[in-house]
Image 1 (cartoon, rainbow, N blue to C red):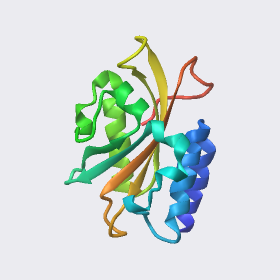
Image 2: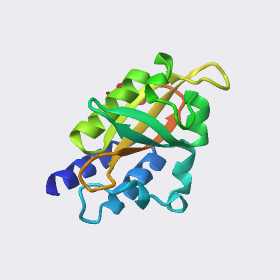
Image 3: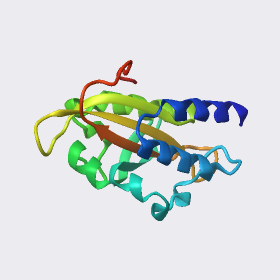
Length: 167
């Protein structure tokens, strides 16, 4: 687990938003010596700040496909998604390709993956915002990734120094 610990320490240092950092810290605390926590380990009462921009996705197939199980209110409104939707239904202007790239990396590499990108907000003022999101793998059997939890946050304003879109 030494490699994962180092990866998580590096990742934690890169995260801009305290809410996203708190979500990743929570996921890390659920590991308790395991490779992955399970979806059943998640306790919404333990992460109230993260709930507005959380997503939990079902993972199936090879290559992996992603179906929405649960979305926080802000994510639902800004991405135009609902429970049961396939993530591939996200619009291009809402960052579909970057979202799918992040989720695929999370599943294939079996570790949290951070993404930063700009996207068009669907509801509210017609504008673009920056999104920061970290997708973390979950496994019911401890070996196969069958869910992904994503902790996200949006922010307005100029591009922070040195920030570039990824993945």
